Image (cartoon, rainbow, N blue to C red; front, side, top):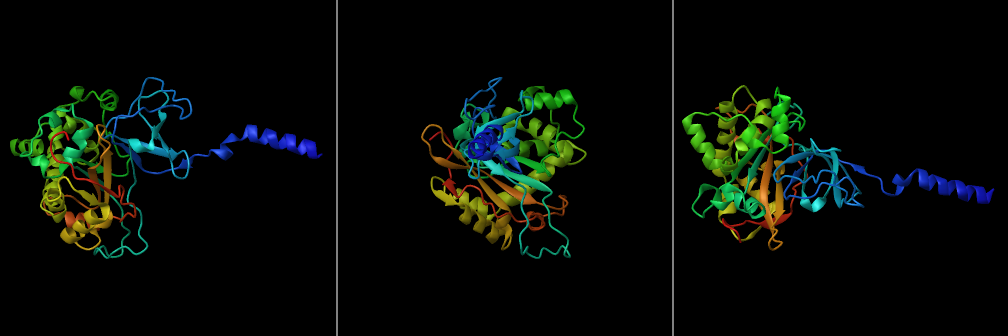
Length: 333
């Protein structure tokens, strides 16, 4: 009987190998900070189709390979198969803001808080260290707006699945494949267009077409409304102590605590708890750079809205993201 029991136990190990390497289910999305192989297998590195992540793209997060993951399982639309593993250091795990045990009073009459939007604001010099071939990066100078101000990456309606609203399948396929030149042109009023080109330097690479097709179509009725509202809240952000903190510390290291405290100073105590910091690694020298901040927002974004109200209407998050990083200067370092 004892011998039989050992044999049966051995069979169980063969039949249920996942017991020793179980995946850990994760929520949210994976924001790629580098171009990395997206493999079908961690062990073999098999990569059908030679799929790589695209910098700044957000992918559905599915799981980690263990409690403290070395790899994340993400969904890459258009890949065969779509479920792919990427190294954890290739990007950041972003989540919708979580509930706080004692949320601050935001005048909501006791209504439950939520996150309606995520504002993604880049520190463009840090991003450009990872994509030096981008037009907006080869042309960046110390005197340009994005050398000392936050740049608009995007305004993303939540939940994360709220994308490509009423977008034709062929247009969505072009976007997912990175064929942004094939996407519909973004037409705006002259003043809005001029401001967008300044605040979103990625328009040089047609980033605005991607943001409209994937996210803007789920925001409102028109391109003008989506981008004008995005620019309005970016104006509030760039008039804040957070922007001043970055501009005054170019070349130095900032912590997530300092950044959150700057949001508290500008928008009210507790505002920083809606902010998450993302870092990138400079491929030329390994420096850890701040690449982006994401801010949870809730409420109606219109002419009367201000960033402080939108921040405090959103649920706080206990995940500050990257603990510290360098505020990079314009130009390749």
